[in-house]
Length: 367
View 1 (cartoon, rainbow, N blue to C red):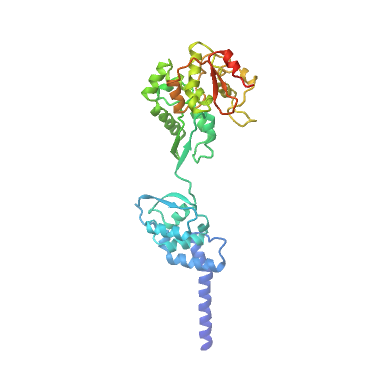
View 2 (view 1 turned 90 degrees about the vertical axis):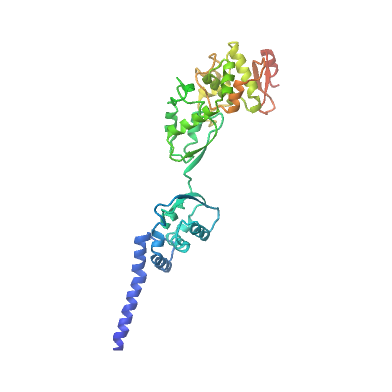
């Protein structure tokens, strides 16, 4: 009789061992996925048992009709702190159950600091996986004054937006029809207003371009329009000239002076002789790795392009970059001068020396 009892106890122990070592981990894997490779076998059994004990605390959402709310994780914040915070704001049911799942799955080591959008319609497991990617739903995209469309396009691959450089460049050749100042334009070059934008990561190419052009339109005040008219310029012509001023003026407080030189030259039928238009015509410089070759050689100044204002009189056919509001204002309200020439000062300051005659201009050359 004692032997039978002993055998029965051994059988019970074997069944218990089977349940503990094989069934429980296998069951947990089916529900919660595979355990982290870094866990030892006893740890796998331990955390598998805990997960099965917690059951619906991890797999069931708190509220399927829940609203979205913001949630932030600070750099260096501990897993315990994150779990407790999630419970306190009502995004998960139980912080300890959540922490157990993180450790079991190995997700505790890869939570990213950042800002998230979470809601109670997500299960605790969903929340755990969401916290592995802090990529925001919105992207801050910056367009700098003086950028040509290719430079904007080159910023897209690392921006977080789902728009390729090629898609963007193709779309810039189809100006939005809703803006009268783009009537007849061959591209939106010059009208992608330089600013800091907040875009949805899923924004389309056309939506992105339209937003930038709308931003330009919002800054095109009646005062600016009247100023352009006073200079004898249409809005499109003014933007062309402002884009040249933007690229030429290293120091912002010289924009109105440089604008006056270009306008004075236009008024007497003199060629504009503007380096930035030649740079635009040349395009990308592989050696310098820039769209704006500097310095220009004598050979560069001979490039056969309608944008070469050393060879062709008048304004180039299109803007060459996105001008800032300051450059637009400089064209609308230029300094009142008789200057026809300017050249860079020899001190490397970025400022220029201006002259009314060519003889004065020659005398201003660096010695």
